[in-house]
Image (cartoon, rainbow, N blue to C red; front, side, top):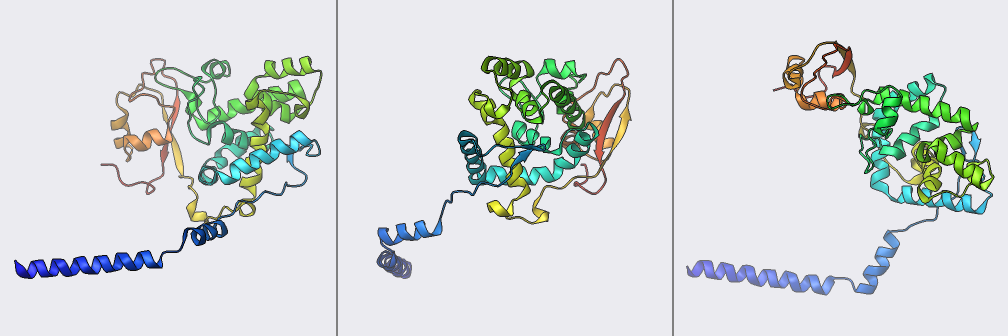
Length: 308
């Protein structure tokens, strides 16, 4: 008992001695503040020259256009965690989006519209818009997407990208401008038309719009600039840091499926993996009374752990 007391006392003395030394060696608040200032710097960003969207020039010589562009560059450059996540996801999803846009004659810059709409996730907005391209139910059905309790093709990246391409193509035909087509994706074709008529102007950059639509194209432009020039804006990563494309294949299903957990296991995966690759399947079963043909995506073997 006495030995334990002596050792405990010795430890206590040592601890006190370390604490006193630490206090004596700690830098003053003034020194620490100077160090923090020198270690962390926030820089104003140089404005890129000759910015364009879908081949249409951005008139940076107009003061408010310059300021609005500067705002979005600053916000998205210094929101580092979010923008780095977007860069990582783009590596996985742009290879799906790009060829579909090209097939419909839509400029590749519109892939950044999906970035700002959903952050390349199957997001759900407070208004009920869903998926990468954020379609409302009525618009999705108008363009032929199946939306019900069993299936919601707004969550099918390939099909919803095709619908987005068709929508954007119609807007371009209506306005004659890809920039206005992008703005109309946010405000609606009627909304943009109404404001152009009311304000008696034709160009997006001459319109006074609400905050969301007024920022919309500039957000696309900022993320395009940053994601195409990540080194310039201080984003450092290796190819292996990016999210990979998982090779997959599709199987045809034209019958009801009573249990997708069993279906997944029969195909060498589990239910979670099946739903990751097919988020448009909304329930654990598929009624399919009409015997419609669906294409269900399955990953190639070896990219996930074996199903239990």
